[in-house]
Length: 176
Image (cartoon, rainbow, N blue to C red; front, side):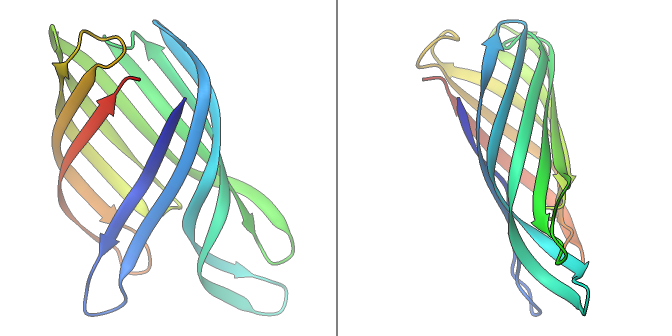
């Protein structure tokens, strides 16, 4: 079981403030060598559609259905992906469209440290990529283990006029 708040981003400017937000819950089967799962949530997206009588622009909230997969060892070399499908109102009815994807490559460096490369983007208005070092700061990999991943990279919010720049991140993972 996992809960995710992604994408999360905002820009404050002289023009219109722009923000991106998505939230989802995922459940699945995790094996030491692979993981598969499904989830659902909601995401803010940019609406631009023809409803039969007029062109509609703006932002909407839609249901997202997520699929997750990991190939490789949880605490070793692995590649993991989350794919989102968005259900949105197109004026003439609802339709499913590709909503976005995130990916992660983890490479072990030494006991308790990994190189992590992550990135993603989609209709939620985000595009990003980062590299970091995942460190086990408490525990031995089981329950109660705490991981910290400082990272650097680049990010953009792609609504209307795109804005982007450097990014500094910090991820916390706690195994219950």
